[in-house]
Picture 1 (cartoon, helix red, strand yellow):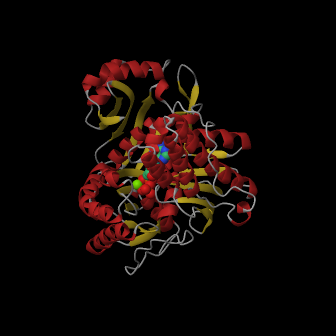
Picture 2 (cartoon, helix red, strand yellow; picture 1 turned 45 degrees about the horizontal axis):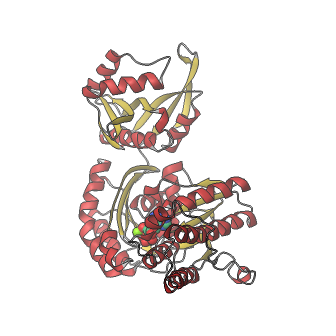
Picture 3 (cartoon, protein in one colour; picture 1 turned 30 degrees about the vertical axis):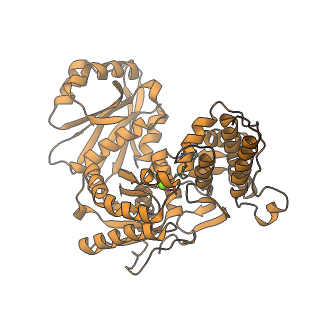
Amino acid sequence: MLIREANEHDIDQIMALEKTCFVNDAWSEEVMLSELEAEHTFYVVGFVGDNLVGYGGLSKLPGSHQADIQTIATAPAERGKGYGRAIMQALTAQAIKLGAEEIFLEVRADNKVAQKLYEVFGFKRIGVRKKYYQPDGVDAFVMQTSLVRQPLVLGIESSCDETGIGIVRGNQLLANVISSSMDKHAIFGGVVPEIAARAHLEALNPVLNEALDKAGVDLDEIDAIAVTNGPGLAGALMVGIGAAKALSVATGKPIYAVNHLVGHVAADILANGKVETPTIALLVSGGHTSLLLVRDLLKDVVLLGETIDDAAGEAFDKVARVLGLSYPGGPEIDRAAKDGSANAIRFPRGLTLPKDMQDHRYDFSFSGLKTAVARHVELGESKGEKLELADVAASFREAVVDVLVNKAVSACKEYGINRLLLGGGVVANARLREYATEHCEAEGIELRIPPLSLCTDNGAMIAVLASQLIAAGAIPSTLDFSAESTLDVRVVQS
Ligand code: ADP
Ligand code: MG
């Protein structure tokens, strides 16, 4: 969705959506136009292609520290895709830009979905207006959120091939800008650390400027700098750390060195307002495959298991190569598997035999699976058979997903925790989402999957983790921390 400021040429589409969304109490075109054009209002529209999928507006009088969200609407067919959240984000960022210290809104008492969205943005119910919505006679809840007193945190992430800079105010996402060097690694079929480090160096300044611009804040307004110091590629981490230290020294702002993996868990705060604990978290990317038990985000995160060889994303990338597909392999295999049969070939499920389940209950291994796929392909070739790409891709994908989800679900059951949170780039996998959804539903486990932009490596999750540390009174890191490529998940802050 593309979001931009609304203008009078949008009026026809806005009115059409207004009438669909507010059947009994739609504003008239005159009212809408005068709101759009008023000096003290700010309206945004969201488009997918030529279609208006949502809009929202706020008012903020000069000299006042209060902004009011006047309306927000998303097309019924487009709900549940995060568009409402994106519009709220644009409005919140503008309110901050205009110097608002708090935002108010009214919401129908019977509109629980909207209330939930506002809660994500920190809104709390502060009053009720009886029978406010006419002719239905429905009460309005008055909700308010404070924009001050919450620290403005800039987070830098550079542990692998994404240069990510995010800016949050408390738990609110203001900007999340990512530049990936993925293309530069394509010919090598995997991330090359030196190339990633160099790319971070080039990307940092533009990404920083874009993030500040998106958030509508100046560098000197930032209250704290956060940075990933591990785990990850040492050379890549060092670039982000160097930048963060330089910014901290130059601005005099405190610095927080935080754990990348815990950051992935914290990403859910940006989507959900908080991380519900306890939870099991499965983090699957090109660099990690980790199963965590999170009893307390800041104080009690335990590693239950991890890969003993390749990471899940790495397995997708390597098998894609064997199958003659390009890098990154995950999306390619997903595509190739679409019309294939997941049961065509029974590929091995790593570390699931009874003896493995004693020593490596929650660990993963994908290198045997990779070899099995390669053998299958070679054997077919030697017999002169045509490669059934769709079946091989689907069967391989099933073997990965099967192990990931079953180990995660059994951890939930064994620890009596009915929550599972997913993170990492492999969460983009269609079958992983489907399989996890089915299994969690069957077991009564609540499944949390943050939007993909927060699942892959990003600076916003690092910023929001630091923001939790600040709220909990954590003392800033001293400048002598360094890159820790194998940082223990129990060390939330260095
Ligand atoms: P990292 O930066 O640690 O390498 P990312 O979070 O950037 O990891 O995720 C990239 C990895 O995710 C790559 O290994 C890629 O193949 C994998 N990936 C991306 N999309 C999919 C998908 N649809 N299915 C499986 N794996 C995927
Ligand atoms: Mg990456």
